[in-house]
Length: 346
Ligand SMILES: [Fe+2]
Image (cartoon, rainbow, N blue to C red; front, side):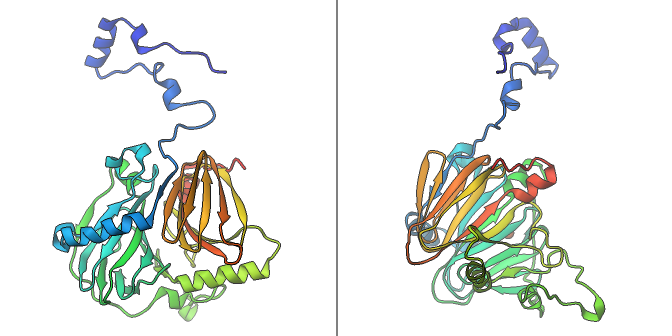
């Protein structure tokens, strides 16, 4: 057990004043706070956001704030542990529910934080990323990686909502977050999801691999879901039925900082995920599940989202005994691995 260290108030006031005047701080009164024993201090609290409760407020934002006054009409899913004003779900993750109404246009820009969209509801909207027009359908994952131009349009008749997941808190913290406004992008032919349609084969015109940093921008849910269903049928003995969204050229995580996954819970299944260093976000794509995180138990109905702090085991349970449940997961694994702080504590 670590012994108590000297406190700030143990020091004479004149000494403390002299330190302050010279921009100096004694370390020992704060040492245990910045280097706590065995488990880091985490501000991230288990938190759940009900889609049923937030949806009317998001639609009301559509009436209250026109697009030209919002640019991106988003309600941020903020973790109270960090303080709502910080607009972060975890140390590195930002979550927002974004609304686009029929005929609206969210203008082109690019920025240093990486973003992905997980489409929640509605038909007819699309995101143009780096000249590739990506239709938005429920459950699709669309990347807008760092530095790539992107804009959102909507030719349909009903509101479209998607979940934005960004590494904004981390990029902002490192004082590298900024955006550039742009012109409407010309749409180019070619779709990554067609080029990389089948696992195991990839386009190599005249024996050349793609040199694009982000060769695949849209990951259709229909394909990810089919992969999970096939995996579950092929390996009935395997407990976790999970796929990762990867860069098909490198096999590495699809983006540099956050990791993205889809998980299928078999009918009635309970799955315990080990305590790993990264914080995690769970978004229910299909079915109903329960998430047990520390002392909290959340029921995840379709389109609900919750988050778990790092170093915490999470138990997921499919609440249906007949139907599979499908979840989208985002976490901070690529970041922790690059920093060399990744841990799986089992
Ligand atoms: Fe953006």
